[in-house]
Picture 1: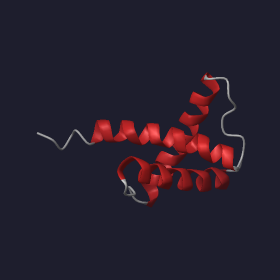
Picture 2: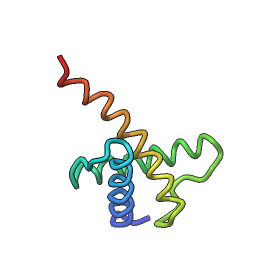
Picture 3: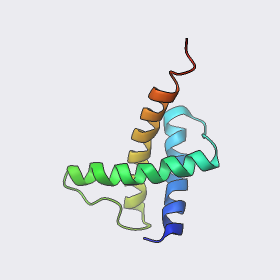
Amino acid sequence: MSFLAWIVLGLIAGFIASRIVNNTGQGLVVDILLGVVGAVVGGFLFNQFGEPGVTGLNLYSLLVAIVGAVVVLWLYHALVGRRGVV
């Protein structure tokens, strides 16, 4: 998969996942980064359960990336969200 396809997949997955997790976006750059990381995490998780990971720019790969991005965003909020609380 090309670099541009990873960016597009990451942007879409990050945006959708951020809407699922906290109902607002984190910003374009953070959404893309968390979405791309989420695609990698989702691919790893799906491979652990015997399913194929990200296979290209298609609906199945988007689902895998969204699941991974939700996991990454949940961890992100669990770690970063606690810093501001005294």
